[in-house]
Amino acid sequence: MSNESLDRFANAKLDRLTAHGLRRSVVDTQRTDAVHIRRAGRDLISFCCNDYLGLTHHAAVKAAAAEAVDAYGAGAGASRLITGNHDLYGVLESKLATLKGTEAACVFGSGYMANSGILPALAGPGDLIVIDELGHASMHMGARAARAEIRTFRHNDADDLASLLAENREKFGTCLVVTEGVFSMDGDRAPLDRLAAVTADHDAWLMVDDAHGFGVLGGGRGSAWEFDPHPEIPLQMGTLSKAAGVYGAFLCASAPVIELMKNRARSLVYTTGLPPAVIASCIAAVDIIATDADRVARPLHNAKTFCDAVGLPEPGSPIVPLVIGAEQATLEASAALEDAGFLVTPIRPPTVPAGTSRLRFTFTAEHTQAQVAALAAAVNGLFLPETDARAAGA
Ligand SMILES: *Cc1c(COP(=O)(O)O)cnc(C)c1O
Image (cartoon, rainbow, N blue to C red):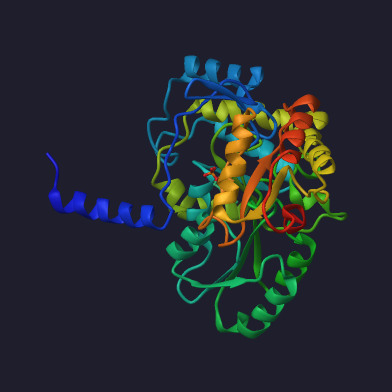
């Protein structure tokens, strides 16, 4: 049985998306190892997964999950505050705190949930949250849930942030400044040293979402360790679903802040704990990040090799955008690469601003030199329109 007005509503919304070229679809996809995927019976080499270190299919990470399912069952059974706080949480959290150099850490269900819960625990009505204009949707989710005043600063512009804070900081109670270590659609890095200085000057708290830096930059510890000396960042968030290859997320911070999260972050309190097997896999993954320097260095190395070969500027992360501009041309370039055996998803508005449609390549530790070279050859063979797309990407 279906409710007619409900279906009419859904269909009208979908028709509008279709009319604007914004309709999306999920495609059945099987990742057969860290690099290969199977779609519609066809095997492709993926350059668009976030599995930077190839840990989704790493023997030790998989074995940890299998053993934990056997020992502890499939699910947690309750919220962490009831009976879902398996001992493995403490092990993972102390490893993360050690790696990040903080007093404590707290693991959340996912990055989206972490950002949704952290911000409202630290800011509310009468407080100020300032977000980089290219900040992830989950930051805005958290900021809206906080019901604080929300402002944005120009992308990676510490001077714009400084003047915004100079003008507005005193009108508010607490003030949080939120940015990403590595921006997910452009692969560029935030000027964390300058942002840390500006926030400290204005009694604001800096929170960095290092979803794409953790495990691949700063020797695995994250974007902040690309700076020497590394800036003090009081709120260091990251996910366990990208370089770590599993699922979940964390906040590394002082002991009182972490204690507050366990009391007040609604996306931690009012949700079931992670399955023990997920936590066990995360522990194995974090051990690899902490000890396998060669694996950690490879994604960025592969990105550099590719950029060299296609004439793009040196990348700051394993994410490499090739901005083409027009949507149609971007779709055609992606289709041509797929014909050549490579999966590279086209990124279009509203994910990125209009007129900046792009191919977005991600490089991993498991891509071979031969695969990177073959991709570069295919990209060099693309017929790209109008203005020099390489220059636009620069
Ligand atoms: C992927 C991502 C998230 C969400 O993390 P999940 O663990 O996938 O929910 C949050 N912030 C940024 C910047 C991301 O790229």
